Length: 158
Image (cartoon, rainbow, N blue to C red; front, side, top):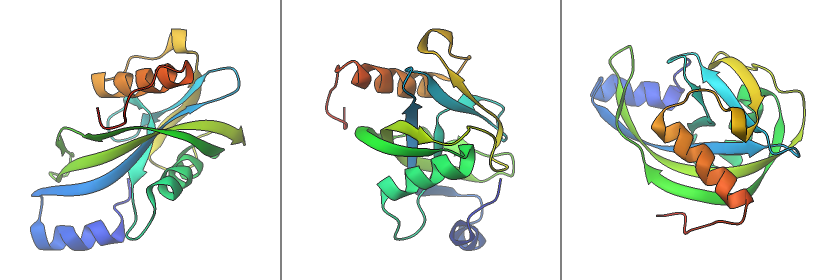
């Protein structure tokens, strides 16, 4: 996966030390209630679509951009589901990072879902009853999105 230029510049100064980054993720649903997921190229795991903010970019703009870049579809934001600090991540190249992630609920608008960049191996829609195996964090993200669709909401910071 490509490393954004501003992250590369920071890495030149701090090496592989833990880097704190703002991130965005989305539970994208279509009119049938299916959830859009991507199988990540770096881990092989099925996951919500996600990415990091570019300097000066608004979180809402970032997640809409990430959905388009990763899955080739347009979506609109329905709600902010959660603001969470994720567990630290160690990448194969030795870099470590920790993300403050803003999780959005998004509605599919248009486009044919497909792998649109090198960050995913697969992009697919899944019914809530037939989700692929996912990590606890990813399962929780989808659970929060589906609960919000049913009207079962809670403050985003909990």
